[in-house]
Length: 199
Image 1 (tube, helix red, strand yellow):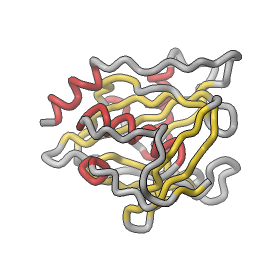
Image 2 (spheres, one colour; image 1 turned 120 degrees about the vertical axis):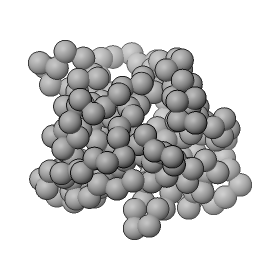
Image 3 (cartoon, one colour; image 1 turned 90 degrees about the horizontal axis):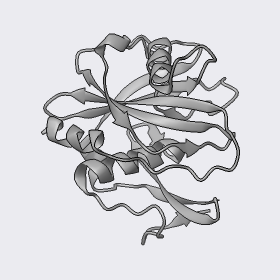
């Protein structure tokens, strides 16, 4: 099943950003375990970080000047943050880039990893590493919705609750694109859902 889903990612053409100016770049890895029930690997960022402290995110970060490309950035950061060796990652392809609240262009790269990896969280940056079954997001089990007005339109971004973790913001937008792509979930970020909306 996973190979069929990943075929969709490799044939996917991400939406391009209509950005007028050059933004600083970053990349994140969207790791999916190669297992009977594939899972997404996520991190809880350390609370003391200056940006996005205490938030759930995919492993990743800013592109260094010496990074040859953004795939390299995503793999380097994943190794630094959670001890994931780049050689264990099969990079499948990118999702659509997004601009963060801090004015950084973030490009997500979907990668397949073994399900036996023992993660080594970098305590200075990462408070926890955890996995969520892809199936969890398939039926859009949002706890509530945040409305974000951005680039002249409204985005209705789900906020998910998985155990003690709140998954929202840019990370949730990336997950929605992935789930729509893999499962034809039809989750629309530009129409208000029937549930309560936080603005």
